[in-house]
Length: 170
Image (tube, rainbow, N blue to C red; front, side):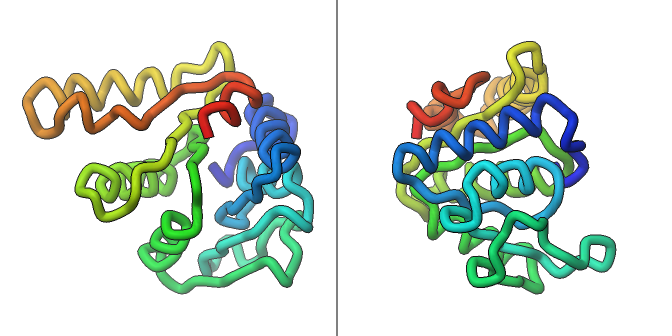
């Protein structure tokens, strides 16, 4: 979420998770916005973090942690999502709004239909957070139970509450 404040515990968790990914030799790609995207870019540092920005009138600038040489600007969300998915070896999703859910469902649709290679998807939340737990309850109740998707379609999803647990899944 671009609206997660820097003093929020989720910001610190996201920053630490990105740092842990970098410490294990990985790079981090975010949407280059504020909130948890800035936290991930901060944790990755300017040499190991990338930003895929979307042109929005109310967020005209990328976060300060993205090096200009590691920034790509997009006009359309669908193009940005394609590059996110194409260029990533795994995914860490943090609580957020419509954009988070849009990206999560797009990713899961591509995984479900075989349009992208299977890769781990980590649902990162605070230890006492309920975002992904509630989200998964909804998905199971409203999508799995009526038969719109199979429980097996969720096989790549893992939840994590600590940076090292998230990174271990990737």
